[in-house]
Each structure stands twice: as C-alpha cells, then as structure tokens.
Image (cartoon, rainbow, N blue to C red):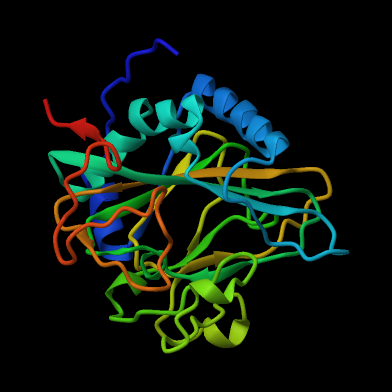
Length: 277
C-alpha cells in the first residue's frame, strides 16, 4: 500500500470524552482500502491456523469466537496497518502525546450465531505494564451493533480505582490472578443500577472505539444469523507506560526482559509509530 496517511482530525470534545468516560467512538477514520485489506488479511490468517489462537467457543457450541494476537510480528499487512494506518496518530492525539510506540495487535472474530460472550474486563491486568498512557484502538472491519456483539463500556470506570481479574476468551487459568476480584457482569440488569452508565455504539466498518486500559468493557454473543463481527484492536503507548512483568501477564514474543519500573526503550519490540512534526 503506497498511500500517505492524511493528518487525523479529532475534535477537542472527543478528546475530553475519552479522558472523562475512558472511551470514545470515532467515525470514518479508516478508509475502504484499509478495511478491505485487513478484512482479507484476517481471513488469510484464520485459514493458516498460525499465531497464538484462542477459541472462545466450546465444542458443540454454535458459531465461532476466534482471537489471535501479535500478528504484526509475523504478517506484513498487520504490521503496515499498525505503523502506517491512522491508528497511531489517533492514539497520540487522544493521549495528548508527541510520540507513541506500537505495543501490539489483536484480532477478534465472532461468526454468525456465536453465543460466547466477551467477558467484562479491563485490559491492563493482562499486560506487563502499568500506566494510563496506553490506548486500544478497536477498529470495526464489519458493521457492528449490540446484536452482532458490539462492545459496551462502563463510562468512567477507568477512574474507579479497581483492578479486576483478567479472563481470556477460553478462560485460561494461567492468565488469572485469583487474588484479584472478578469484574461485575454489566450485561446483567442487576448491575446496571446507581451511577453506572453504559455506553455502546452502532458502528460502520471503518469506525473505531478508543478506550483507556482500565475502562471496563464486554459484549454479548453475535445473535445475527448472517453477519460476521470482525475487529482489529491495535494498542499504543505513551510516556508513562512502565514495565511491570507480573506472573499472569501476557508474555511478549521472545519473552523480553526489561528493568521493572521503567519505560522500555526498545525500537525492535515497541517501534515508534507516530511522532509530531
């Protein structure tokens, strides 16, 4: 792909919404060329069986909840998306940073009729990092609604001072810190009370949701009989991302070792994705 990324325009109100709610939906920032290319790349990666695949559907359940991770380390299309699409500049502008580094990417696919939910969770407990200057850019590669497993968020939950137990789509006990509390299931009406405000958006392919690493979110199954739900999440980090290698945190490719309590300065592992002109 030879296109030169255009400057990303994000309203001040969207930046304030991200800071206040811990999440914002941005419309139409990824053009059709990017969406078509990454849709095809997703199907190609699924067909290979390559990567760190997790299956969220149990044998005998309908549909398929497929997840994969670190595609940019071995697939040129995903790496180009991480470094050349609008995602990195979106991250920098939301974080008010002059530079961001690419962290990693992750695929989420729910085929029609998939009943498996995305359990309510925060992202940061999965990662060997601490800090608020990390953002996930969740890019819709298909149209998305609550019916097709659109994400829902507890607004402002990044400010709750909570650290919930991580849980993977296949409920891998190796990734669960049993000392941490389980995140409430905000899909249940009993938990949608009081001051909890749930945010969700119907999305077109090319829209994205951007969320803080401690913002609580989840989704139901894909109730559509015909519509797939494909999403690519790319993560970027700014100045205060501090290395914190906890035992249950995801292991990065090559299992790198960095000094705890410091920001890793490793361009091979975390390449600079955008800098201010």
